[in-house]
Length: 436
Image 1 (tube, rainbow, N blue to C red):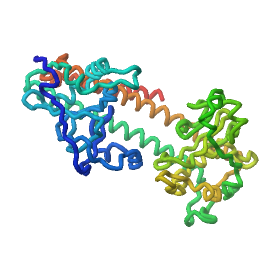
Image 2 (image 1 turned 60 degrees about the vertical axis):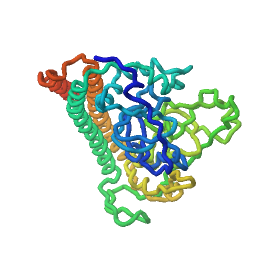
Image 3 (image 1 turned 180 degrees about the horizontal axis):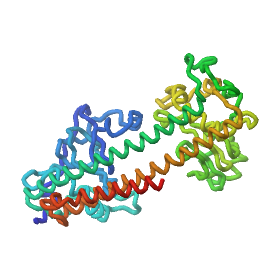
């Protein structure tokens, strides 16, 4: 092992784009370096600068670091030529001393992340910075090139196996969620079939006792608002104020923001009762899904949402929520692009749409049937996610052990230890599924 300062084998690349036409790259703690188009949804481009001229050039094989987030692991070796923000740092890896793949694994190990965190400067965690001069002055122990390449080959092979298992399990979670949604869609259709478009009586073969009723004849609607941010006393209270970022659970009981009684009295916000169904009507989240949640506590909502209060003599809050969730594909068809590229739900058109509504006693049976399936699905998905977490932990530990010389990669792979560890994770997952 030879200890070398980074500045001797990873000098900074200070080359800048004159056109801004190169591929824009993104740097993340999760995946390292990727083209921005692969790393983000299309709507993530909102914050992009008007011109990329003057951005830092990156060559394939360079080490790229977001030094404002180095403490979180936002760095990696790039497989692509491109450009990154001028606020990032780019380092050239000298192949005489270091293998690019080894450097990627070594510096993204938990050990080096903790080292970078310790060497970062800042008053609070979110302000920590690892500037180029501090990075370049640090030392790293490097084995000889042949050993580096052997470790990189080993990790490329073993992490690829683990990544394939993780991807397989992620697909299982997606498939499980799709099956649950398919079940719900079938339950709220009640066996009816689409006759034509979405206008008029667009469903036929409704079960006996079911009606095709406009949504506006099933609910009362309440809008939302945002109390003045200039009034500090409006935002010191205990009244929940729900915004789209809180729309992540089936029933909302806890939220990020709260307002005061003064805000309730001195602004347009209204208190929405328990059991109201909330729906997001504006925001970029509508590019992917239409969140529909039910209130478990009285709350206020912001202007990007609507609250639907069910008319209890015709529809329950529980069934209203499941009905809208089951028709998510139809809700998505009512989304359009509004000003500044954001997404908007054509709410007035939606509330005029006729939905199939069963009698109240049938609504209760449908909700009970779906809830039983939902609990089972959640348990199975939780078991799979736990298995994914175990695989990620094993992957991280394996990388750290290999790049720090804790294991002999020439014999470790042949011993079958990786297979035994992976088999144990699979067995544990099977037991969790059986219990679920």
